[in-house]
Image (cartoon, rainbow, N blue to C red; front, top):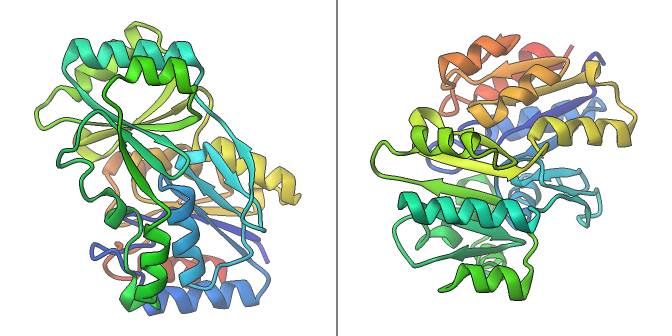
Length: 287
């Protein structure tokens, strides 16, 4: 087998626009695994979210990369690696948010820390744990997992940081206007030590601790599994997947990926609404 491991993104990749996974894709994944391949979910989603999706499609027992590389879950589901933001960069970041009038929320385990309830967080639990009804998900199990997630309103973020010393692994930033390119420039200007990736058209930013990316987590994981990077494939659709696609032996961009991401990939497959992952597995990995 030329490629012994497949790292796959979720949103815009494995998940279609209805937040479901096509049966064709699930079947292709299991055909690849039957032949000895490992499938690793590599997502910006939370540990609970990635585990719920993995379990629903029969990927229990595989390692998982969550929060864009900040958390690595072992095959038994336990956290084996976790990267958190140091206090000073967090404070600098929050000060800039307040100065610029930018909304951000923070991920502490499977809890979302928010300054206020608004449209960017009010449905987070439902979005974080999709029902997956057409992908094999059971409604009662979905509800049970959702009950383990929490949205916590933090009125005084400075005080919370100082007193609680939270283990924050990821930050998400949202804005309705066109402030995010300038906000990103200001972060870099002030040398706030963080990894910043944007979604298509700067709709939001996803931020992880310095040096933490999907690519860095994939490198760690392949070392642990003793699988050469040259024998790994990665598939994704967005800017936070770009480094991972470049690092893997075979980088596959989804057909719905931005042009800049497609240019970094070795191959391009169909989009996420036409079982693009299944097509990629059958074309490039089952040989």
